[in-house]
Length: 206
Ligand SMILES: C[S@@+](CC[C@H](N)C(=O)[O-])C[C@H]1O[C@@H](n2cnc3c(N)ncnc32)[C@H](O)[C@@H]1O
Image (tube, rainbow, N blue to C red; front, top):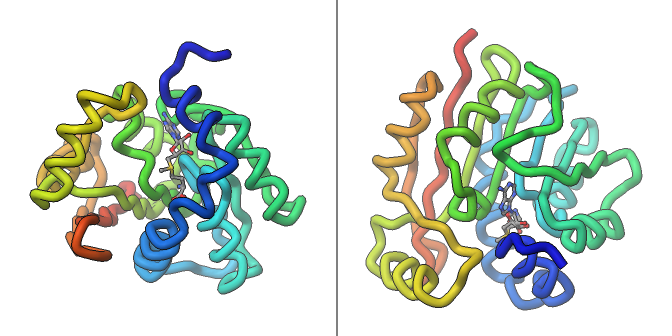
């Protein structure tokens, strides 16, 4: 078995992930998709796609787009494979070393994966590298601005080796701007009393 705590955690959780997290995944998927401004023919990367729920939902509303999912955990991708059409490419890999050529995607979307990434600056550079000029980033994660998420972050740092850290909206804004993303907007919102979320939207330079 891998010594990577994220791989260990999600290899163990994969089979229960969809049922255990159904409310959270539905709510965050909807919040994220409502902020994706898709164009016909867009090529989209879902970074940290997990079991593929966002891709499945996206294809119901925009069947003409091309989607690729990436995740480091084979057990999560196996479940995504069972849910998704064979035309959807699924790749094993990490956000910090994306297995794609420069300028491969019009849109990069990601939900609830950023707080696991050990080297966020490197991941953001990779996001920028694989997006085309003028490409769009839409990234949702839970947000440290909310006290409930501060408590969760504190607890998870103590007891869950897979967890890395959560960010304030302003920190994500700064990370994206420092990497050269333009028109960065980070919106905060709650999906219930517990989960305070944020969705960052940004563009690569043209
Ligand atoms: C909470 S799940 C979210 C899955 C899916 N995006 C969703 O919203 O249901 C977090 C996912 O991030 C993935 N992940 C963790 N570290 C990652 C990394 N360095 N690069 C890409 N994905 C990562 C995990 O394997 C897991 O599938």
